[in-house]
Image 1 (tube, protein in one colour):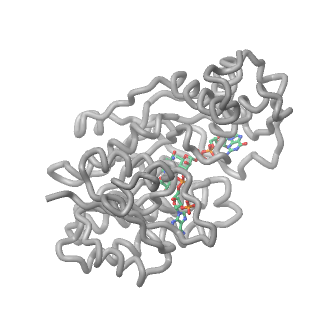
Image 2 (cartoon, rainbow, N blue to C red):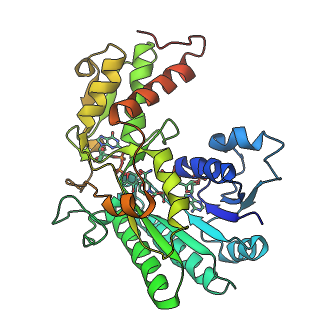
Length: 334
Ligand code: NDP
Ligand code: GDR
């Protein structure tokens, strides 16, 4: 019998890679989407245009994360064997401006889904995408599954709550439920307001004469940046373990925003110092400083390891922007 999976946040960066991964593995996939008046789910266009896939092996259902009754009805109808919970307000900087809705969807949204699943027979396996932001200002570097949570952003607090709830439902109600504690992961499908995509897109635009300046916040900000398709391929493996457990997913290698600038602009033969300015607007009220992941447990448990180097990933993103912005050229403008 085919496995049936339900994904929340299927239209996001990770959701779009996860649905491809699961379809390739032979799953029937159901996704929950918000229902805007203008339906544009760009990252899923290629799948929705495929008559062998759309409404055959991939089905979309409309619901916001606070539509509890609708989500309950969808889950009752679909009867998924596995639920992948990715939906939520994912911008850390924005969480300072909209802390209530961030917590409403990211924290309470997760609890509501756990409560719905509690009434299912059997209870589907459950994967929650947690975040390195739960470590906030950590005492230990690198961080692993046992590092205490010390979030310093509203987003981090919301993810910390959701992460602990997943653990509580595993330990108290016997759920097969796991947290994938993910450090930053990027791709050509990354949202344009995140610093990585902002840099790669702007570098390409500047090269093509479509933009004259790039304004950023803290250029010394340091993160553990990996490649998004590598991360989502771990999600399915996590739910196939003999026993449920949380796993940190990370490369273990730190880089700064300046590293992104050096590689992205350098690849296009530009000196970023000629084009980049900074503005307080993009500097966070609080920003974790020493986030670096230790993914040894994931390596052991699911034989997970990153497939791309940092430099390969940055260049892939720059080349993607050049192709999209300059479709007549098969090669980047050098
Ligand atoms: P995106 O922002 O690209 O995608 C977020 C998804 O959540 C979208 O499908 C969005 O729908 C959906 N969503 C947001 N709010 C709601 C809501 N109220 N109701 C229903 N759906 C909603 O994020 P990513 O794909 O990058 O990340 C996926 C998850 O992983 C997120 O929870 C994020 O916080 C977490 N995470 C991501 C990391 C990363 O580096 N990418 C690292 C660690 C954790 P719509 O398209 O309609 O906006
Ligand atoms: P992050 O990613 O907050 O780590 O959250 P983001 O790309 O937004 O910021 C990374 C670092 O770059 C600094 N920065 C800027 N950030 C943005 N967005 N715009 C700028 O102009 C800019 N200039 C400097 C930030 O201050 C920060 O230090 C991502 C999201 O995917 C979360 O959902 C996820 O949980 C974490 O990664 C792990």
